Image (cartoon, rainbow, N blue to C red; front, side, top):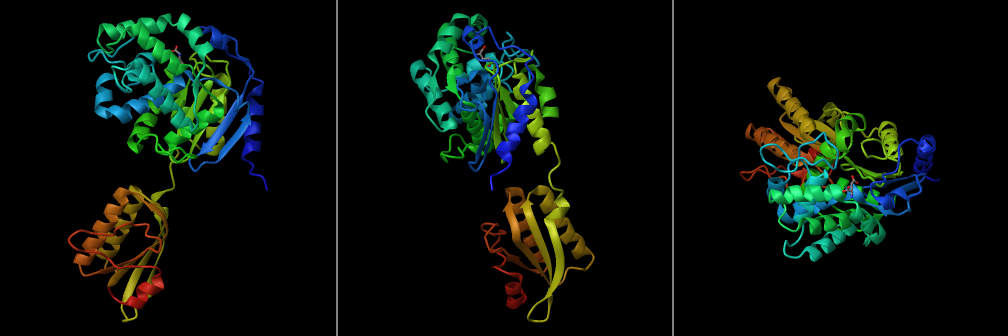
Length: 431
Ligand code: GLU
């Protein structure tokens, strides 16, 4: 059996193929030369499955899609505070190449507009070694892609000749000491960053690396730490889509970044990276058909971040009573799914209510057999509840055959017994 996903992707491309609206970017002469009919889409899951359709192996320059990844490198090297000191995280509502700075602080508003991206570029590597920095940026982008990337020298030369706007931005930044090097050199280096050649497949894997908390799904290399990936995706969500970021996040609903060569990426934390490519752009500078592909994927695949997840009540699969070998009774709470705050709150509330109503027997069994993950806050809530129950003389046994709840230490020397089955808990008697 073949998986239906590639067929679905072909269908999505067929549905948007006829749309020839928009225009290729021509302010960079080399970009005006591309075949405007190219169209591709790739999905990469966080566990390394890659699904492709259309022109997904065609090369093009990364342009602004480099911004989130170089922001990630700067965050990883300098830490959040140092980077925030230089570049804010507020949506600008302005075009990507606007000559604007935040009132008051004088910082660029965010790292996804050129002013912010140029400052962020200079925060990677050693300030004394601009050449080494360009190499580090290229190596970093390559690590995100999982293969060695290279600069498209023709595109670089072409953009360098017409980068007047970026020179203006860099001079503005230099006048405020936001950058301290020669503005022309900084623009040259930033332009090299934008001229790195990628394919749609590369971009999907780069996005999937962010979605996977900073670990490349195929190479399994940790490129950046999890907090970095979270910060980058947050800024992509609010500022990634030029001056249509608000419309994007409300309709498509996942962090994204587009670039003037026609690429667009989306990252859905814990699930997948998406990339689409089609060179004709809308008035905001985003790929017309790329945006439409993302809209369709979001609607068809339920990818909007604000769609409510599984309701918390479904955490408790069932409750029942078992007879212990010593004749006493235990109330079993069989849980399932992924335990986060809301699910743990529901369990704790049910336990407290049962206790208050005198329905809690002498002992409680928490059956975690079907729980596949427990986050930190849920773990702490669970263990504190176990501690409180035990203080009241109610024995608690955990059924946790796969150690989904690591190190069940409630503090103060309290550790509930852990067994593999409910039958085993009953056979042990009152703990
Ligand atoms: N290199 C381009 C510029 O700085 C990137 C712009 C973009 O993709 O939005 O003008």
